[in-house]
Length: 144
Image (spheres, rainbow, N blue to C red):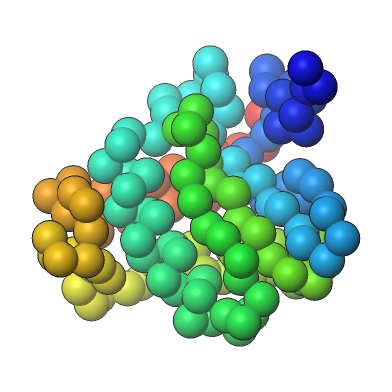
């Protein structure tokens, strides 16, 4: 079987941050890495789920709302994939970083926080989402 692109990345050296992972025509896939595997504590399922709700909602209501194709967690619990249509790295990086900063200042209810809207709303927690974003920015500053 042909190896998929995400398995060609050296996960032992891949840094925290926003990285252009692949380009498929007009679809740009960004790897938003929150932690370094085997070095940092991974995101918990609660953090991933909570961030998925607030981060995706904010991106889909933001500057490039009509260009956001997908926002979802990585199964390895190290971050998220964000797919945009026709949004280059500089603009995507700026959008992702500013949206994560907005998560830190968000004071409203968690989007999709009911049994009717979510398959397991009991794991949603805004403090968990904010904590994960704080760690992202701390790790981004360290760059070691």
